[in-house]
Length: 253
Ligand code: URA
Image 1 (spheres, rainbow, N blue to C red):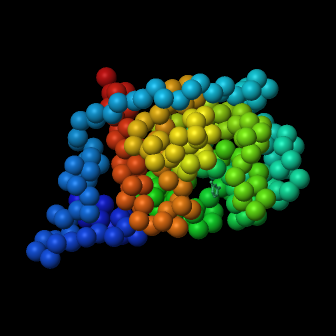
Image 2: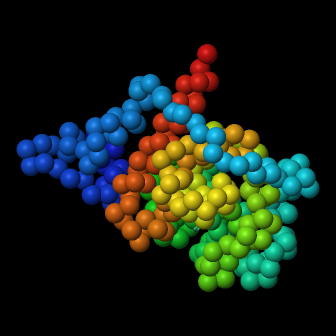
Image 3: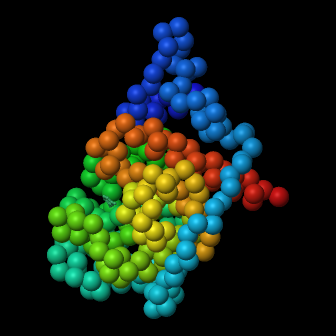
């Protein structure tokens, strides 16, 4: 483990165990294999898995919209009853040409108030997770399945997700990310159209929205409640990094 990785793991509040007779840089909390996977020099060996059923990329009236048109459409959307209870729609934030896109579930109270996804405590942990793999928040594009807050943070209803998904798929088309990081059970099950538990959706590379690779990990809000699972999230992030690097490798002639 490099000192940098060690620092990041500590920033994420992941316990790093050290044998008394060794320095932390040689005594990783994970197996050697897991830590060396992040080294860019390692040959990529990612198998993409064709697991996602095809979702309609975006409904026809949305699929040609520009960023500005799409944002205006989302801000004024009344397609589902959530528009009546939201403070404002939460469109998404970040680099509109990002290589990575992060997809969560729905705005919470903080996001509804501020109009930006992942700004509460979960958002701070998401920022730390991104930092752990070398990204500043502004470098990725962050969006949710739902653009409006469900009251009392209840789970999105299927009809709400159906109404809102075309916006997300248009965002995916416009950003055209190399990799999608999907955080949380609801987002993963919605995008993959499955009720498979998240534990079984992690650890592999799915394809959605025209074959784009997607890695699933735990929602930062869940990780705040279950910090012991951060190690698994770390290995998901490593899978995402390796997948991304392997795609970059493919692009080199
Ligand atoms: N949880 C989410 O899934 N998205 C947000 O924007 C905030 C919390």
